[in-house]
Length: 408
Length: 101
Image (tube, rainbow over the protein chains, first blue to last red):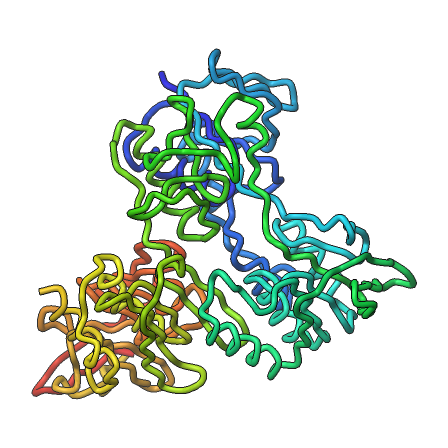
């Protein structure tokens, strides 16, 4: 009987294990994770987990109910792989156990990046795991102020959660605007304004020199001599892919574990998926990692299918969401493609659909509280279908109707 | 349990769910292949109105995170939704749609 080893028991690892069984794989599945928790999804860690009233009710985003693993003969083990011998097909665990395998999927994800000048401590946190989130949640009780280092999606979601708990927030961002690579400039500004309207203070172009933990608080010093004093600090400056085990084992790495469009690494029979996987994306086959719920979900399923003999290329249409205050913001496509023209279908400041076109094709779309509309144009973006621009801009024309006409 | 007025059949559109309140319940009505179905209008994953979502092939996608439900059975079909949404019996008589509460 074959054994498939999955290293990393996060959302990707959990989904892959499920996909193997759903596809009819009847062999042994071993799912190894460093965290004490069974597979769970991370999006609520910066939102609901921090803002929920009661500790007992603050988290429920498990990928599967606890009975799922035993019921599906998935051997979930809380342990760490110390050594992965890809030739002998043997994994050595920290506990001393050895696991022989036929194929392996690495879904080790990433870890929060640290800032050398602001080391972690009783008042300085990163936010990646459920354990982190519970500690931050606890620190938020009775805190009156927080400094957030990093104005990316995580930092901004955390800022919104902190404001919901009436904590003063200062976001310190090294760039000159928010989410430079992910958002069009105009929307970047709208997002900043939304936060400012909710009381968040921003420092842009910041160069952090150091941190001083004293008297139950943190004093941050910037290169321009400015000082920011707060009760605690959250460092949200991105993630480092957990590629070290793969690298040590002889797999090709570099901004993640390098895989092909079938999710297979440089070593046959060893695959990778999720936050840790670097794969060729788009027509230009540009190598990148996608750090999203959708990628953890879909790349893991694609890898599982390919491990069972499918030859299906993973060609995602990136879709991402962020919830901040009363805004559900969704993005379709990426801004690596040049946009000639922006068309907006705006209902109000809090409800709009912004589309970036290249010629007659929508290459990027961003919605605020208009998920249904974004979904209505999704196929147009996925299929690069030319669209009648005047009709697109006309809010009297229904998007479903437009989509139907464009695809017929 | 009684059937209560929900909408006029002619107000329904196969492309768009119809949101209404019947009694004190927020209901979404769906017109699929000429038949009318009804579910509770609030997503079981996070607060969002399913009627703001995307209806296709008898499935409603929540506008927030695109979790899918079967409008006929209420079953949660794809992540991130896992809990089914409540469905209601529907009657259509003389152009009037009623929902059983």
